[in-house]
Length: 453
Image 1 (spheres, rainbow, N blue to C red):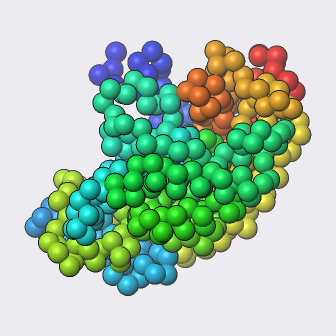
Image 2: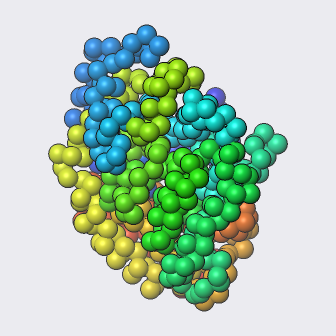
């Protein structure tokens, strides 16, 4: 009996022993192809020597120093590198606040937005709007903004009052379009207009920020909004003086084939949150990118942001992050993701032709989601008691494939999806193997559940 607090105390988990490239191995010697980069984290695969060497070198110099006393060269270097790839208007006066992961980054962004308006002389601005069908983190502030009903439910008494609007969820558009995703840009604009309605409802003088994932990740299986959505959101935020926070914890730094997912629509947020792929799993690391207009409010007044974590700007974590960005640059991995997007989605659509319970294939770059339905024509979801997405994940695990399942996203009970998010370094042969394993998995699920084929 282990003393470890497992994610589920009624399950058993293998012990990981080693990893290399896109593969992990447990202590029995079984091999697993990492089709989801862990939790969309290990973007560069496992065992990259250059990153390990950068970590070891920093450990030899200094492992830790508190940011109330020192700043490390690795943190300074990583901050400069992140600003250099940020949206163009950021490069004058922008600054980076480091955290230990995505949830901390979102908490920091919320507090930064509030502190900005206090410094700016607008202390009544306190409301942060967000969306249903979203996930922003596990800490209480981030969970209050999260719009995934099932993840919120156990903690509702601890969470803030919901201030959510609808997401531009193309597959289940409010207009009732079917059977595929809605193509209407007018519908996308209507969803964006709900932001202005919410701002006017609460009063512009009370709203400080709007936070959203550019492409919805774990809560909606890589759902991409209509092309007109983000331009309208940016317009509304600017009109009412509301800060736009882009949660790029999952999508940032190459996952969708661009540096930031917001680049697909040429949108410049005021604050960007990062985590996951920033250090590709080699160290716990996150960051908040604050544009010059946000930073200047602090510089003009107190100069202090009343906030902090013990491990903010950790020298070793920042060294890992810097090495990850350098590795991506040297090998042109972001461009490679963009070039190979069609290959990933071609494989996925071939499976959709074979299995009728795949209702939608969506995403960008190397972030791909399958929505699973009992009837493709009506988009009827599976009976939640079947646990289809979790069943697929378990069957894939038996086959030696790791995928990222999701459920309960439609109404807190119904809805199944599975995401693929392989490391950027996956080879053609490994991609073929991934989909061969997934095909075998889906065939097994068809046989066991008698679902449509």
